[in-house]
Image (cartoon, rainbow, N blue to C red; front, side):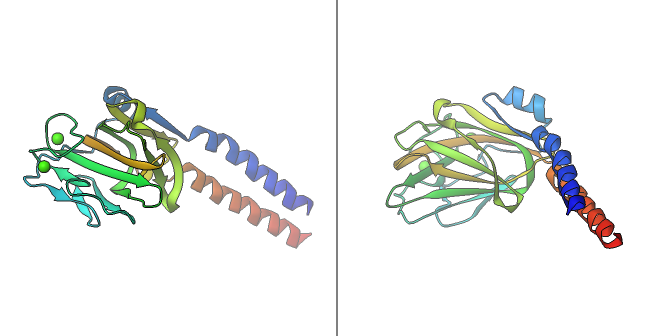
Length: 222
Ligand SMILES: [Ca+2]
Ligand SMILES: [Ca+2]
């Protein structure tokens, strides 16, 4: 029992500083995001679309990611689509953009954005996210672990994040933070791919397992 306790304490101590070094850092400026994360590996300005293209209950692929809106609510025409001129709502900057509508309350709509490969940084220009239902964007790692939440509400402009310590994001979940309907626009998506390094907590879990194995061996010998 004593050796198992020693093993657990050793594993816990080893894990502590490494987990603290992994961080979710939000950014409101593309230049500072790229200074922290490096060069973009994919960008999407939606200019390749020539007709309005709905992603309501239909998966649509973009440069570096795909997106689909689902839920119990029926979104009106012109929502949850790549919006080509003439624009329907929530335009960002006068060019083709990603029009999203999320909803909470009795009826819901959420948008899932899945990266083609894991990223360490994401950012985009947002508009119109500051309505009554307030857009929030949850950032998920492998295993659907919540890494952080972006809040574009107070920033009708650039919003993004950088992950440090080897963490990787695989999916974003767009949702309404409050009851009601939120229309928003998103454009100029910028992604930086994860370096492919093994996430730090996983490495240390293996170290912990090794220690546990050592403890077991010791007990068997005793
Ligand atoms: Ca555009
Ligand atoms: Ca349109």
